[in-house]
View 1 (tube, helix red, strand yellow):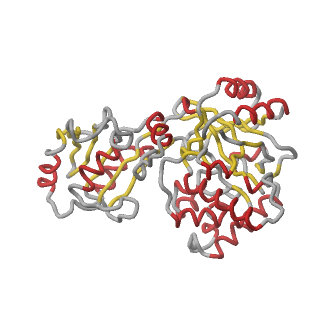
View 2 (cartoon, one colour):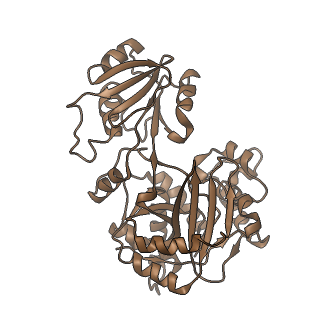
View 3 (cartoon, one colour):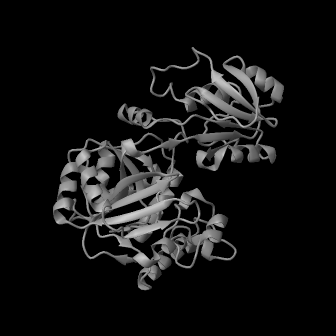
Length: 411
């Protein structure tokens, strides 16, 4: 079972919520962030290297110092203000006509240690360390993690009572056209009931933010060890998450581009593929139509690749995944790419960028081939997390991304 609590969010006044809010730190590079950041943008706090000319290194001490300086400055200027009481918050995102509703809350670091917060990906220590530094220097979770939970009708009913009100925030982001709304759950009876309901929910599932979750848990453990008067009620035992019912979430494809064909000519590579796949040249842009069907862009042409029966195991929660099939049959067997998490011969492209981005990167000469996959389902993700398995790297891409700056948790 999971433990949650309300918190007094640090957040922007209603009139400037759109100006302060920003896309997450890890969906853009520093040059893109500098171009995107307005005067009040949270990017000056989450990507403070943009305040230097030329842009500073992300891991330089002066960059970390600037992050702390800007966080204090935003509060001094009134661009971020802390609520006077602890609340839960309803957060709605709208993308392409579809809206999903979640609750912003504080999750407990112990639940990560005990496995009640379930992961489906491995983390990389260097990325954990980087996120841990940001949490430590700010004594805050500046950006939330993204969790799913088994849908609950009573939580839905409470959320929808507030959704009937005029939202505290309501804007459409200029960068992507996605809508964002926020409501404050301010009735103490509702707050108490939400806490009680979640105490009966068996698990959270990390949708997006494995490294931030792991970093928050490490910070909590470290501060606990240094506090001789630790009670378990301190704010460092908690970290900020936006939690959505699993039946509202949609996973989109997460695609791959490779730099070389391991010494093979395109013709030799196609012949090798035909041993394990049914290969059809499509000419025009081709998108996968179902599980075990892939699209490939090579030599200016699009191909359909369908894995032949017997090359995968539908009864294995990992073996059934298309990322596993592609990794085993192509990246390992033919291209010999090695560990995909560390190989410099492969890159990963979120499906939100479309098939055009795959074509662009190959046509530019940067990459030699691109592969698009059919997205995994929430059921597959939950099955894997529940069985203690780990997905191959870069399997899931959730969209829309959480907007940063609508709430910050300080401890």
